[in-house]
Length: 158
Image (cartoon, rainbow, N blue to C red; front, side, top):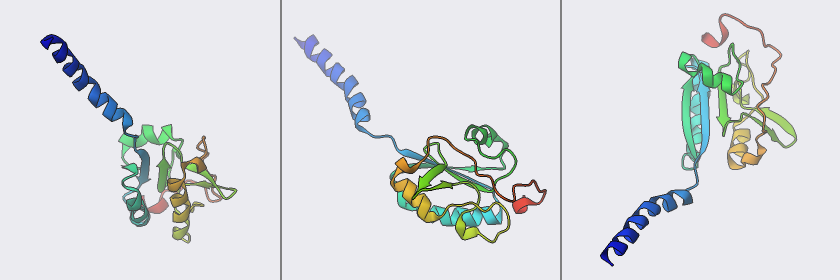
């Protein structure tokens, strides 16, 4: 009888962590790619202000675009091979459809327009909408084509 009780107790202790962990929902993921240069850091500061509101819902990781250890991840997400100053990837995606328009969280957001190059088509409101409703994300990442998509040696203070 003592052995049966001990076996039941051991089984319960083994199954309890599995049961507890299966009830926990995994956090969503936000991956932010940036350069350590003034325009990207300005963008990062403002984006972080928004992301702070979602810290309990998302696991956040930050990557320096210029660090060669991140090249494989950049390619995995189909981000530009040459140059881009900033990107936000939510649950593996950076393309979304919001109110009938395609939005890509790649390049500088609207509040940075006037910087000259790499002006994207997204706002903090767009990012907030996607963080509130992940169903807005497209299944495929479609890299935006910019009008000024030419390589330049002095882009964004490389």
